[in-house]
Image (tube, rainbow, N blue to C red):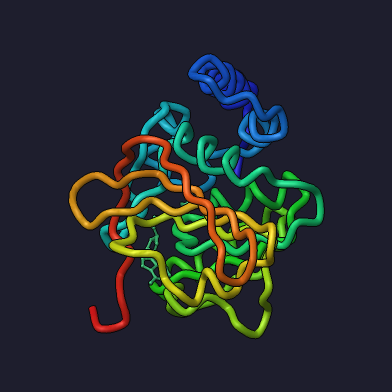
Length: 213
Ligand code: SAH
């Protein structure tokens, strides 16, 4: 895994362009500037890895566009030592960003080869989120509650288990909708039965796959 000056240069430009697009959380920007995104992609993508675009990672899945990663992460208001649950590990890039920001990261993936690949890659890079192979719809009851929960696939509805596993005062960020586009939604848990919901525009994600799929 080679991280050259050229890659670092391309990464600085990417980080600057994301800032220009309106992301103001400096910790997000510096994580994007630091993490070699080309490590998460097949070697045929090395030259284009720092374009602000999603790319295929196999099994019909994608690594999210860096702007989308930054947007979701900013909405999460990540603080050092926050316990963050991610649904949809994919390449492991988003988990790496959260870890770099000082979060305690738990990430679930339902495709075993992606789970294995991400876990192995991050270990090699010296990042140690806790990775799980399983169904994110159920969350991770054994490790709950979480300060923050981030869903990185399009969800037709908010999984009840995730609301339950969120701490009071915690934040869930989830792209909602079953069509081609989803509405980025932030839920703040005010009490066991009170939730505040805000919407942040349209995004495009691969679908969250249910138990029966
Ligand atoms: N966060 C990823 C991109 C995620 S793409 C990254 O940084 O690269 C969405 C991922 O969600 C895919 O890898 C897909 O396999 C996974 N996924 C879909 N449904 C899921 C479910 N029910 N539980 C866990 N993971 C799921």
